[in-house]
Image 1 (cartoon, rainbow over the protein chains, first blue to last red):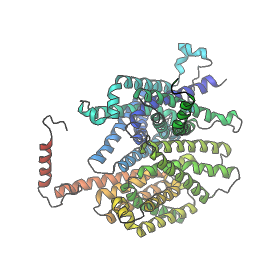
Image 2: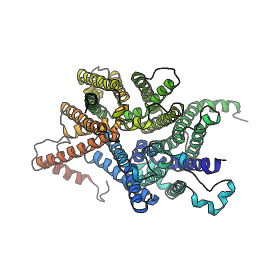
Image 3: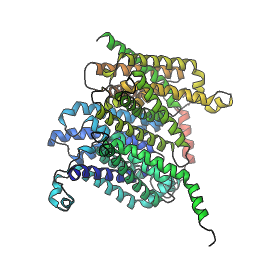
Image 4: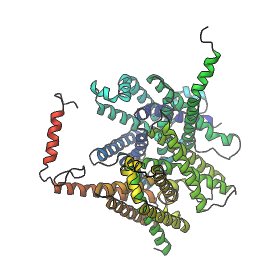
Length: 316
Length: 314
């Protein structure tokens, strides 16, 4: 029986990461800055590597709060740098962003190679492509164990940080609901009505960095952007209201994670291959597929609506 | 260092020069991130060719790999262009969507490839981050050939490309085939990234396109100067990165190239700040250079102050 100790934590991690990223991604997609999510997911790497290295020196293992601090600091530094290049140095914005995030990522990779021996939880491949498969919950053998406090001692700590990321993003959206609506859809009005744009930019950037860092371990740096962008972009095809957009993006994100997990597992289940495929890649690909489906439904939408209306008499 | 290593380095450096020069056009046209999306999207093409070779459907050659990469990069470009037309999908979302889902497919297919045939030398990490040491001689020749081709096309189509990136509207009204020039630019970029995946890496190619261009455009006042500077810094960074990874260290090539470029960029920015401090006025913003006491700047600032409302809220 491998489901509870091995497959269950991976599943929970993927769903938590999808929900947190799917919700947070609205901050990027609705401002038409999806590539900033790509940038932030790359920017966090050097901070994470340095923090994990320091943690390894002091405690002999990485310490998660320090990792978060390092990652968020690196993201803030990187975004400040690229804004400075674009606003003060007159660099072309997209090239500046692209160069800054690749340079940060390159620094992270080199640091990872240099400090690789001292840390057993981080290596280049996991940083790039995620490590859902390595999450193991040793003391979990059946669903009854979920009710026992003792079994939580060996819970993978990635699950805790993903849960925290989901809670933090939910709280952020609930508290700032109205403010976000104004800021995302009408920045000019939000400025005249006394909101500080810089405050919103900073807080949303911090939230994205925090969530990206939490999801980073589950799906890897490059694929975080799939979970950040695809759900919100998919929801945006249909949604008419802000609340609907938010709920739809979370639902779509969960569907994407579920489809991805199934896709990774399918070749083994049908006996085509001897092992499962990488789940992080499968989730990102499934995100693309689900988005394509949403696009097709959206294109067919008016026609479908017409058919349904024809069947229903207008004046009963 | 053996003769082969020297040849590899030479090919890599000329490739760096060509992508630096092309990067200037791509940057001015605002297309750098599209190139990033395309280079990520090329990975499943490589994995697919590897899989087909593993199943005995075709012989795995450098040519087949480049063709696979080209096909998927082209597909990604078409999908981005198509998605961008959708009224509710922004250009950024289109790029991020295509980039991540293609890259996810690549990760899946590489995982599959490893299950089918683990003896192959096709590693995902080396294609993502670049590794000169795994490069074969034929790949070095293809780098060199593409570098020559790109340089020749830039030289031949210089006027048209400049018009495209500086004043597309004027170019269109005077009868230049704008769509064809744009396609030419993107085609060259696709070719460049397809051959550069192995040595520079899918994730790092963006840096080699954007970095030299930023350096050239930050310093130069004229296009030929910018192109020359970009080409030189691209070549230098590739020489440094290639040498370090050929020396037998484990460091992947792409990140060393990018970090060299970052150091060069910092130097150029510092030098420019010194130059501006020397001449007194900000020259890069198109103001006349001869303004020793910064009069023009003060005038502009004074009038801007007058326009501001009382509360100071702009």
